[in-house]
Figure 1: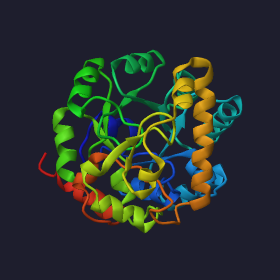
Figure 2 (figure 1 turned 180 degrees about the vertical axis):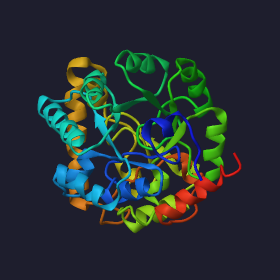
Figure 3 (figure 1 turned 135 degrees about the vertical axis):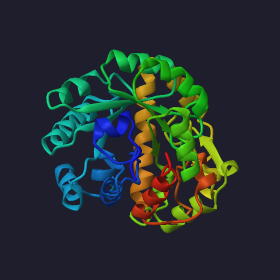
Figure 4 (figure 1 turned 90 degrees about the vertical axis):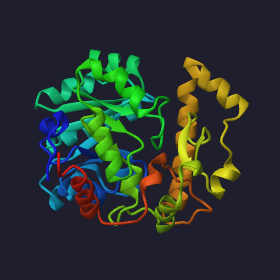
Length: 326
């Protein structure tokens, strides 16, 4: 069963569902399974290379060996360092060489990604949390918007799905709901509201193909919205996580010096880099193989609709059934 929207027409997919890029949970098997089932998976480059241990081109080819359907790449384009930017440019070029034509950009100005992909007819969507960022993204030439709302996992926005769509719908670009969708009923409701598709992360962690620790998946199934909290201690900006023992020990507020550095233009990138390196060390030490005592588990309030761990193909089939009479 298909549901045609501007998103499905642009990307050539059957269902308007994006398996969102997740650090650290986007292993290539999950990306491939989402695309093979008729949705579209999105590669997170740092997850692919650093967490899951694939050389970038080889990781893309692994996905292509599983499915011939489209998949995308996430490009976090904030220039936190020249080294990272140079590496990201190379990743984008390799992705284009390997046939990737869909990119989701986050932070920063997406124009260079748009310009690079335009040569081969690529499509670029940009993460936004409110109208002013959407306007800037449109100035950069993007083809669609990922509307990150206040119930999303990871770096959530501040507006509800309804309020955010009210701001973005007049811009006449495809808009994808990111946050709060964990069950077929909510999926259909977002499409009926006027969204061109949904992006899900938390729901895809609780699948057979995701190689997150079983404790993480079980925690998602057990969790309720009240168990999702925001912590600044991972990246310097609020991140939605499950309030497990690890988070309770770590705390949710940055220290006084960190908050001061994050408020100033010249020091915020240094502070974010420190947070990022610390998170990488934590993750490398536990590497998705340990239980809740050593892990932070990102998740959104879509946990309300997640009651089991299942194969991606079964999950997509259930979501397709929710729109079968449309």
